[in-house]
Length: 97
Image 1 (tube, rainbow, N blue to C red):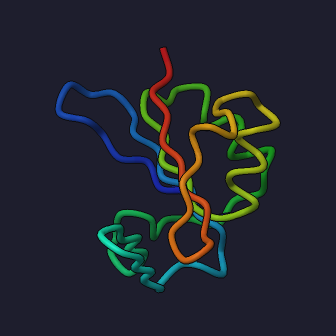
Image 2: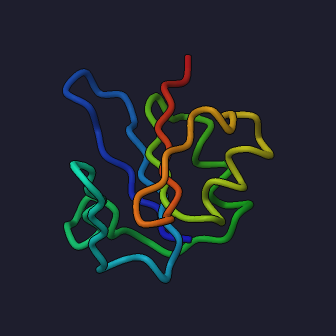
Image 3: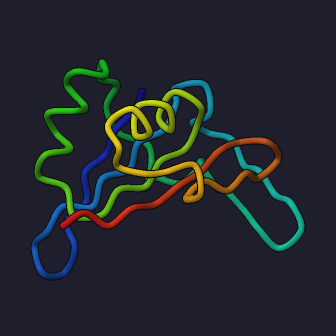
């Protein structure tokens, strides 16, 4: 998976996680769009254990792709109700406390 950490204006971590095979693609359905061509998701490739460690300091998490979503479900960061699909690509966001 690919992970990129952004800083919010107040200094907290916003983490973007995307399955490797989706980077550089764009998906549109009705009025929804997943644009994975921008720099927002284009970070470093990491294994799941490394990503889990990096999530400990996260405030907001953006997830795209089956692997990223499955990891977040297993960690109980999100529930199935949090997931939307755009062109059958799963996407979810979460705010952690």
